[in-house]
Structure formats: structure tokens, C-alpha cells
Image (cartoon, rainbow over all chains, first blue to last red; front, side, top):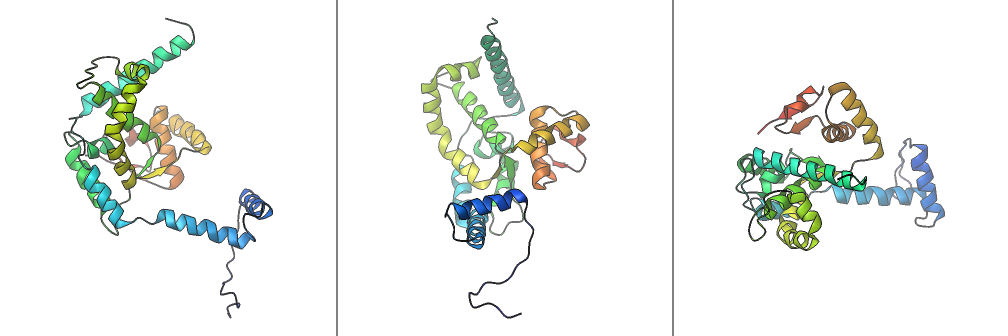
Length: 99
Length: 151
């Protein structure tokens, strides 16, 4: 199949009515010239977001791993969870005007 | 638990967490760590509570209430938590909880008897197509199609 002069290639797909409505709204609002431009921008942003920069991950691992020394164990986690649940229950009672 | 274990060098889960996160941080790793945004709330709350229990605050009981009543302390503690939390989040893929997950949560609760928050985690997993979960909570074993990895 010959490619059109724009360098773009045909691609058939099906979109939900909601996605199509959103796409058309973006075009009507002149955020994008065409549906194609909007889709290309969306995929480009998604692609960027999905790329995981190995260097950034390595630095995050080096910095974050063991950055704190708290000695948390199962008992401490359970205690913290109960403390929070207890406070939330008391807060709900106060909101209802109960002691 | 694994998230807490990653930032807390003194945690009983630190060694296992370090190995897991290390694998996820490798270039072209086949391991990707995904969690619901709910997890961030749980992790931060636990870290704040634990820090509030230590000097100079030394809060022994009702730490949640103490934190709620002392926003200045929360601000102070967030200076300690902020950087490790940013690094933790960098290594995770966070999935939002969307309205459809509420229905998913109800379905999970109805079939497994899980409590809401755990069921919400499973609902998010199912929506995004995940089938392996890292937890020491055996309650997740009641969920068909979910494989649980324990430390």
C-alpha cells in the first residue's frame, strides 16, 4: 500500500462513544486541528509517561532504599492501623455529637 | 508492607523489599511494581505515626489524634518523609481508584468476604489486568485468579 504524501499511515480502530465525544470536543475547542492530531498528542504523552528512565530509577533506588531507620514490624503496623481506625471511629462519633 | 520495608532500613521486611525494588529498578526489568494510590496514604500514615512516637514528640498512644491536632508536627515530619516517599513513588506505578472500582470492590467482597480496602485493591488489580500481589495477608488467598507472593 502506498503511503500518502503526509507520511501518515492508515490505521483502523473502534473507539467508545465517550472517547469520540471527547475527541470531537477537543477539536471543537480548537485545542487540536483534527482528531488525528489529538490522538497523536495523546499517544505521545502516554508513551512519555510509560517510559521508565533507568537512570532515574537507579537514583531513586539508591536514595530511597533504607532512607529511614524506624524498625517497623508486623506488630508496629498493626498497632498503627488500629490507632488510626480508633481515631477515625472517635472522630465519627464526635461528628455525630456523641462522646 | 513492602513499600514501608523499602524506605525503613530497620524494618523486618527491608531485605526482601530491597531485593524486590532492586529488581524493579534494573534496566529493562520484567518486574514492574504497581499499586493503588490508596497505598501511599497507608504508608505515609504509618511513617508519620512511627516518627511521632519517637523523640522529641514521644507520643505513645492516640498518635493519629495527636497528628490531627498538631498540623505543625505533621509539617515537620513531612520534611523527613518527603524525599524517601518521592523515591518510593518513582519506583512504583500508581493506579488511581476510579468509580468502576467501587462496583468491582462490591463484587470482590460478595464473593470472597474481603473487607472494603483490601477488596478495593483487588478491584483495581483486576481492572488493570494484574494477577500477582505481594502481601503477607492470607485473606487475599480467597481471591480466585490472584497469586500472592509473601516475603
